[in-house]
Length: 116
Length: 116
Image (tube, rainbow over all chains, first blue to last red; front, top):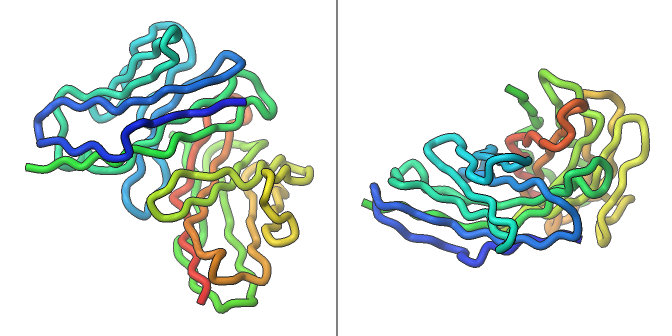
């Protein structure tokens, strides 16, 4: 079984400030990790993913995340946010095999609110 | 990039009627498609996994007879909400898993269902 915890339901931040959205996971198998962004009334857009290799993953829109196996974390960061980054962010995990282990399990989401 | 479409984007129906939602992978073949439900300000909950040419696998607590899923081809899956009730009102999102790159899911834009 897999689970994802996003401790922060809301993160307010001023424009041009740095931000970190936290994600911790648990799994009995090796995992793939994902961050998605959702704008109001839209589907999910993939920001970045960790499959293997370098633990620092760079994604779209200036976001990056670091996989930390010992802490079972995959925190999302951006050095300078824009108003347009205001959205809901979901962390997700899947097993690295085909079949039922490859289902995505989502966290509860973090609302990033960027203000002037 | 991989594109998944959903139709309709919004639908309003009367209580007791049935509604069909289509999910299409436009530029890739998807042996597996997933159907999610999302309530306001909440995360995505997996309803069922749809495999091309076979019966869907439903998550615990999801009524098979109420949410009929058909995956007749490698590019199309449909979700039919039968005898809809106001409590079925929700945002329904599908995703499709690439036949080759099986670790990644591509999400549709979602369908807003309102049952009056």
